[in-house]
Length: 108
Image 1 (cartoon, one colour):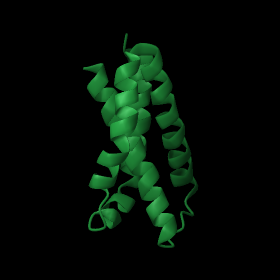
Image 2 (image 1 turned 90 degrees about the vertical axis):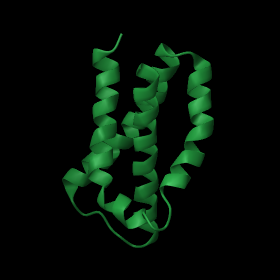
Image 3 (image 1 turned 90 degrees about the horizontal axis):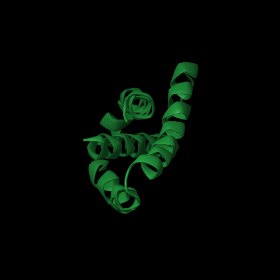
Image 4 (image 1 turned 135 degrees about the horizontal axis):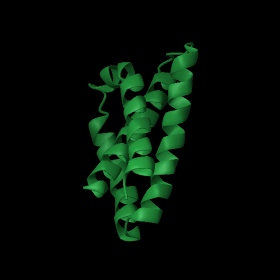
């Protein structure tokens, strides 16, 4: 069960990061301080999820997630969905932070 939550957290973090990159490329500037904090925490949480995975899951699962994740993320963030994902950046960012917090504080 934790492996699934781990992968979903990583996926949401990667989608948030790619959505931020797409927003930057098309010229959407983030001027909201709260949103900037969410984005920062989301990126930090994504790295913390990798660390959690290496400490609590078999390393093969973490490496497999690291290899598969870019392909899944690019498949999800197609051009047709990019605007919707940009609008959902706060939701995916907060979900990443929440999953990270859950795994670090309430699992094992």
